[in-house]
Each structure stands twice: as C-alpha cells, then as structure tokens.
Length: 110
Length: 115
Image (cartoon, rainbow over all chains, first blue to last red; front, side):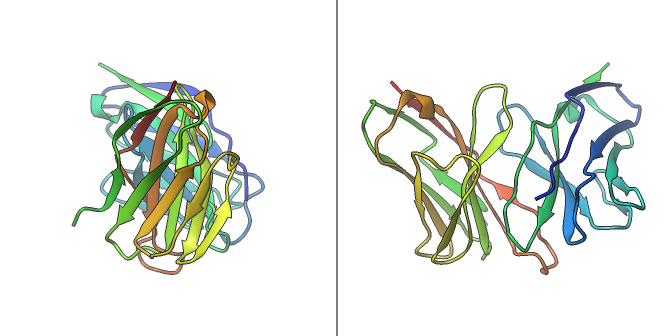
C-alpha cells in the first residue's frame, strides 16, 4: 500500500479556494487516490476519488499529476464549515485495506 | 436506510473486562473496517474484512479480535480490556472495487473508556 504525505496544517480565507496537496510517489497502477474529511469527532466523510483523470463533483475537484505521484484537492469556495481534517489515501481494491494517515488540518478563517 | 450503525455509542469498562462492539450496515457492502482514533491522532486500522467469513489484520490488531459471520455485521471484541484501549472506535463499510460507488461510509463512533 502506497504511503501518502500531507502537510500537517493549512489556513484558508473564507470564500477563497483551498488547495490541499498530497504526495503519493510510490502509488501503484491499480491504486486510487481517495479524499475524506473529518469534522470534529464525527466519522470521516467521503469527498472524491480518482485514478488518473481529474475529477469534479459537487463538493470538490481532484487534480492528479500525469505521473500520479501527487494530487491536489480543491475546495473552490471554502466556508467555515469546511474546517476539518482532510485525509488523502491511496487505496487498492486488491487488498481492501483502507489506511488513513495523519491528514491535513484545514482551518478556514473569516 | 440507516447506513452504518455502531452499538453501543458509549461504554466504560474496568480493566480486564471483555466486551463486543457491533457494526451493522444495510447497504450490502462487501468491505468492512474497524478503526480506533486516539485524541489528536488520525484513524488507525485495527482489522478489516473483504467478505463474509473473512477477516484480516490492520495496523494495530493486538488485543482485538473480529468476526464477520454475516455480510451485514462486523464484530470487534476486546477479550481483556486495558487502559491503553481507551479510544473512539469507528466502523466503516464500502463496496468492493469495480462497483460504481466505492466510497466508505462511517458509523457515528463508539467512545470507550477503560478504567
């Protein structure tokens, strides 16, 4: 299972785009990049995932580099409610093992 | 549609006591997971299952056992609780890779204190 590396914390101004980076240089060809977030002590919530192509849904966009060694989660217009811990995960359905790292604590400020 | 339900939500145990945490999902998911989360830390995988009757060790399996006799249920057991097992426990489930929707859904957590 590929290890992911994320910054420990980031700040973002309310209304601005939040760009959260993730490095996964050892990711294998069958591993997807998943993003989850955890608000306070709630269970994590799924945001988005992708394999090679960039993805967009109603919550966020995921940009994956061509060599797949890194990715960026983009929250286009951050709100105070987006303050959370964001986890980037390299997941392989072959093993089914879903490993969370330490994540990035995003603080959205007024 | 209840999603992922964990029972109980809170529990206080004495050192050496045993207990079982129940995770139930009604989404016909193949994969199920048990995590623990200590204060200020990320989630650590205890055990997981990729199908009925199968289980596998995660990152921190010692002191825990699991069973998945039915597809919809995943049980986490503590045979002899220790204060180091004081934590918040999360259960999750997801479809296997290859299905359209493969995101994991999480329960609301079980706060366990061992005194």
